[in-house]
Length: 104
Image (cartoon, rainbow, N blue to C red; front, side):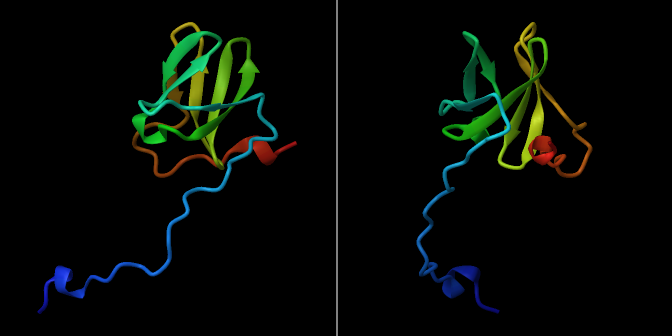
């Protein structure tokens, strides 16, 4: 019946962060600002503050419609007319769709 604080021990392994992320099958790779915004064709698009400082892959799937991916997951689509990220799944869905960058 001890408290968690009495049992805690820091990990001996040091966290080195994420490896450099590459998007070979995407048209663009952009780094989001600390506030989670990317600049796409001169327009600021808010993705999420969670992705601040992270590299995102973008692929044009239709005229002025871009698929946004992070690592192996598709986050959603950006239509340059409204400059908003539309999620690829409804909020009630569990998990993300695997990214289709590996399908040739």
